[in-house]
Image (cartoon, rainbow, N blue to C red; front, side):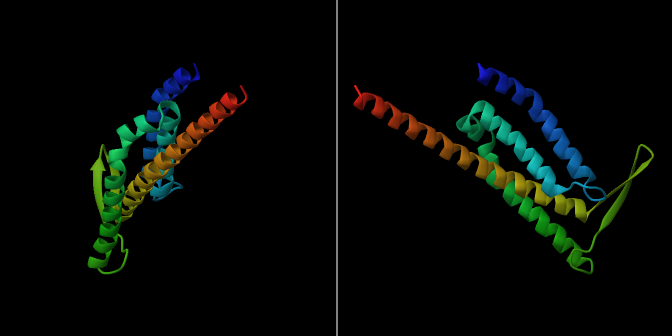
Length: 155
């Protein structure tokens, strides 16, 4: 019965948690937040899915994305550093300004770097959480096997 509640919570909270991660990412350059904390918050949504649906279902859903996300993130973060170096200094910021709805929007290499960090954190967290889930499931299976052997030996 608890699985039904967990799946319902997962279905409702996962999109909310991911929206919070996006919010933290977008405000991170000027205020508290950024790529690292946004990646950790997004990873908590993955952990909720593992708890609600199990390791295998989560692996099927997110597993194929783990390594490509981390690789893309590393590429993006290094590219942000190289763009700054190309323009005159290591990690020098390059900014583009846009006007959206009358508001000035500044995008630059710091956001690009934060995006890379966020993707690396999410990719590595998926890998770590799935392996941790597999180890926990294996330990539970072993405990169950030992418990059933003990019951049979006492008969």
